[in-house]
Amino acid sequence: MGSSDDDSDRKTSGGASRRGRPAGSRGRGGASSGNSSSSSGGGGVTSYKIPEDIAAKVNAPRTSSEQSRNSAGLKTGDFLISVEDINLETPPIWRIDGKFLIQKYEPIKGKGQRLYKNMGTYMSWAADTEKFRPVSVRYHQMGRTETIVELLDNPHSSTFNLSKMLSIEETSKYLDNFEIFIQTLVSQALDPNFLVEITQEGDEYFMKNVAIVQEANLTRKNKIMELKSWDESTQEELDSLPVLELVLLRNVPPSECAVCHQTANARLVQIYGRPYDPSTLLIQENVPTPGKRQHNMCSFCAGLADLYNKVQHLTYHLYLRCCEKVTLRKKESADDDTTLILNDILADEKWLSKAFSDVQHIWGDVDQIYAAAKEEQEGGKAASPGKAATSGKAGTSGKAASSTEKTASA
Ligand SMILES: [Zn+2]
Image 1 (cartoon, rainbow, N blue to C red):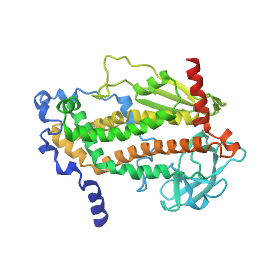
Image 2 (image 1 turned 90 degrees about the vertical axis):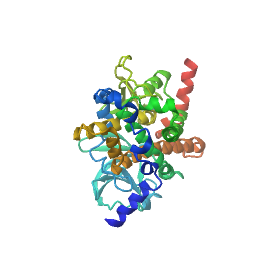
Image 3 (image 1 turned 180 degrees about the vertical axis):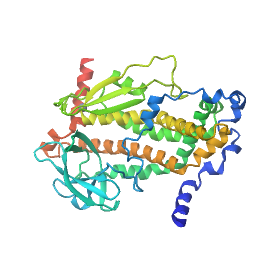
Image 4 (image 1 turned 90 degrees about the horizontal axis):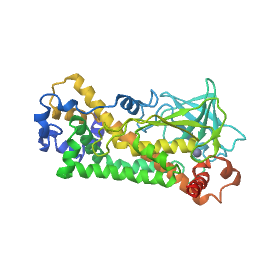
């Protein structure tokens, strides 16, 4: 216990300004000092509203197992490929099933896309990240007995999986900035005037770190914008509505993707939620809540829209997480000073590092998809014609075609 604890402690606190600047001595006192008079009646702290449906959606883990990521960031439901198999023409892939087992998925012959079907074969697994690499899949069919997934990575590609791993390695340098970013959002959750105040005051400590995290996020947003091909009205929905839900349509025939117009196994993309002000993160009370928007999209376009939603609303989603954390903490002892609450929350290393790892995975997914799309664009002519024509290239060739159609008809 001793040595590993020491180690992780050093990693997270070493050089972190959070430790060096306890909230009480910050002058701002987290959320409390500037506003103590207005919030002393208890009214100030309740004036923000957490849209509960959104908070629940955003905070809900995708699967019940998502919380239990192991040290390599892998969790039940993630897919792997064995390093030994990478040179096979169609290597099998494996789905992590609990702590010690992986389930085999074999390629379905005769399909252009890299489709895989679950098999009854299991193997024991010791979270061995040297022998296995994570791969990205998208679900095509989830039956009671048969599950079909599409492998999104090309195991034979030179950038295979490297881009996500390298990305996560690269973005780990933002940990210190991220901690102060979260400190800012928790402070905003405690005092709805916090962001406005630090902006007006030009508070460098907070603003600088917020800007660094948002800049890293903007880089990912720009990458998606380079690949995207949805129209202006979908863009507006994605930009303003913070919740996106992917619904897998079972037992329906393939249909036309609303974005790239390829015929594919559709999924329903639902975009909804209440618009908020990006500078204060507060719900825009005077703007009516728009209805749920729904689009049929192929797996590639749906996945890209999903990633865009995560990047576009990253700050807001994290803010809702902070609001939820604040609410939980206040339930424990409602009378505590906001500075104490802030310090307690920031001392929760596990919670902080989970939030950071989630962000790194989102950025890593964007970097990975971007690298793969670029590689296919550049190497498209060299690739085997069968593959290039049929596999999920909605992403690149089909996309380019559809966006030119759009401009022509507009
Ligand atoms: Zn599509």
